[in-house]
Image (cartoon, rainbow, N blue to C red; front, side, top):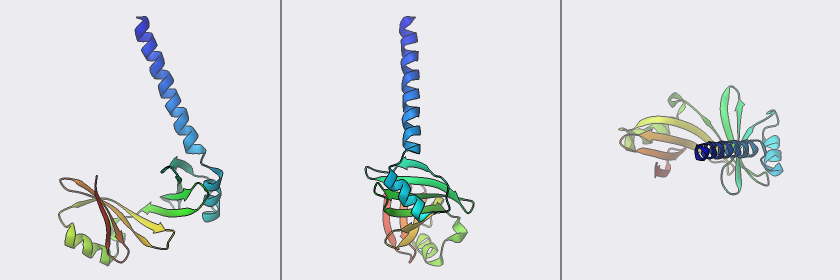
Length: 148
């Protein structure tokens, strides 16, 4: 009986600890990243933060009624911004490539991406027998393809 209480107590401590860590990460991005966000999006009062990689942080926020995500380095350098769009908003060049190479796939999600180097494009999740993650430039060029 004591062993059962020990395991329940240990599980509770682990769950609370993980929850506090996630909350800490979500609210405590580096000052440089927060400052970069404030400069890039001065009208946004707040954002939730998640560590994107070893050196990048993602700010999640709402703008113009849509959910956005913007990625910044720890020193505040803006990397990219993305937000979900609908199929009807894809340009013809992107549709042409999708119809040519992925016509048997179903579109799960589309994000419009604006990069710091001024390039733009579309992250598109496709599904058929397997899931694919593709990036198509705004000019309709397939930039990357990855199986999920």
